[in-house]
Length: 278
Image 1: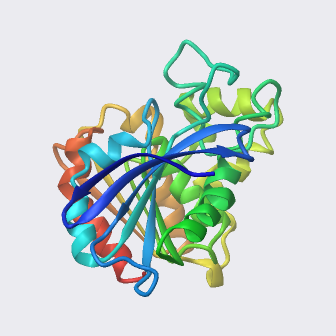
Image 2: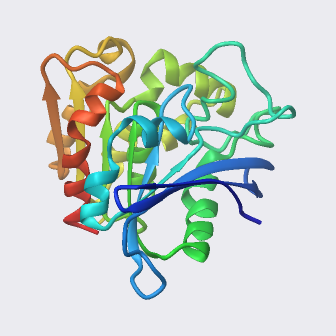
């Protein structure tokens, strides 16, 4: 059962928030959806799924990115899930980079996280099925995200190239098996067997990609991002893209940091990029 908890008109369309009991995460989940003007059962629209970063909820992108005007113009719906399961019974951590708000879009295999932390299944299967059943959207979808969510978007697209027409990311964690954020999350969610980590690493997945599964990607990264060297490792993805001749456009931007000021500066370009394939 979907429960509508907010509804606000914006750019001629509607921004709405919903909660529902999710079977994959075994708890209540919240998501937000933007429906562009004219979306109806007789005029269904494609969807861009947006995955947010550490500490975020469904609200950060919707409130800060400034995406509605261009999405309304292009006729694209946007769906933003939360970044993790939440609730009193959901295991948490006192640090911002693990636990609630830090699901990393994986299916956890280690107790106690394996009951609730199944964000991969939620984003790839449960949420799209729910959206397509209850809203005036087509099954055509793109996926995008920021930071931890950029990791999620690229990784999910690489693992499911037939489900998405395109993928994009701002400041993504592209090589989580080789950075502190990823090592902490993966060791706790997935355990000590590092072979299982490779299944959620965009660099490793792209290395194994075959040409018929290539899908267009756009990545934007600020050169003044204080996480660039230690956590994001953009140069590692550059190397794989060049080696594989993968159709990923990687844009470096002087002066920009890791914030939503950066995202709001280039979100129109991302929406126009996806619209070419949607």
